[in-house]
Image (cartoon, rainbow, N blue to C red; front, side, top):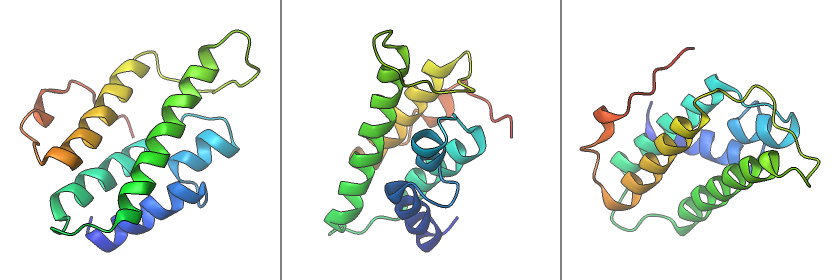
Length: 123
């Protein structure tokens, strides 16, 4: 994946469109593994290709998406909330941890622990 493609994926997620991960979570209430990995790869690519003076809009989009994803899981598990996220994997915490890694690596440029995550792609 190149930077331009990663920026397009980020933008689609930020706007919850085009079958992006956030589109599935927000509009369709589905955890879609394929779009999850596409978003994860987008974050890794952007982190490894970022410029010294990264566009603040990119950072804003990353934080907006991350916040929405985490909130969606919180609302799903809140018995007083009507939101239900379908197709959540049993090891959903591994997906969250993996996303935590990608966000952290983006900001710290430390990708050394990427290989230690046991999450396997199933798509």
